Structure formats: C-alpha cells, structure tokens
Length: 135
Image 1: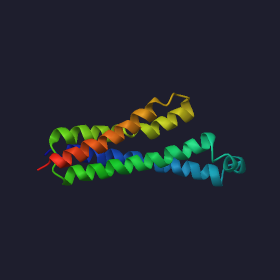
Image 2: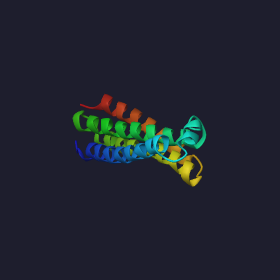
Image 3: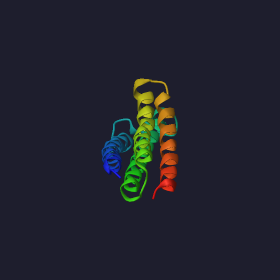
C-alpha cells in the first residue's frame, strides 16, 4: 500500500496544530495580558470568546485525529481506496474549526462547520471499514 496518504495526514495535522497552538497563545494574551482583560474574561463563557476557544480546542483535536489517522494508515493494512478516501475526509474535517473561525471573524454561515464535522465522522467510519477489509 502506498504510504503517501498517511504521511499527508501527519504533515497536515502537525502544521494545522502548530497554527492552532499559535492561536492559543493569542487567546492567552487576550485573557491574561491585554488591556481590558477583565472584560474579556467576564464574557468568555459565551458569544465570540467562547467560539474562539471552541475553534482552538477543535482545531487541535482534529489535527491530532489527522496525526493518529496518518499513523494508522502507515501501520495497518488498508485497501488503497479506503486509505485515500479516509485520508482526504480526515483532512476535510479540519474545515470544522476553520469554519468556526470564519463565522467568528468573517461572519460567514456555519456551512464549513457542518461539512467538517460530517467529514471527520465519515473519515472515522471509512477507516474502520478499511481496517476490517485489510489483509
């Protein structure tokens, strides 16, 4: 089996995780050091600040899932078609946290959130099926 899909998921997961880690440092700055931090803290359990934290958490979680899926693809025998589809669906799952940020900062509708959530779910199912059909 070609290992390019596993490597793609690991590489993508690490880069996106690094980006959401940087975003986490921005959130820490806003909470602990920025002028008016008290106001930010007071409103951090709902609205835009909650959405920002939600994007940070899901960005890192879905990045980690891509790394795990990549490791599975590198180490478990899965038919090539399942590996390819599962790999791309897992990467598509990263649209969820990106969609949360696009809602928050660009005012876009939550379409990317839904597409990303469905994509990561389907990636999980496809990889599970692929493992059951592997050699």
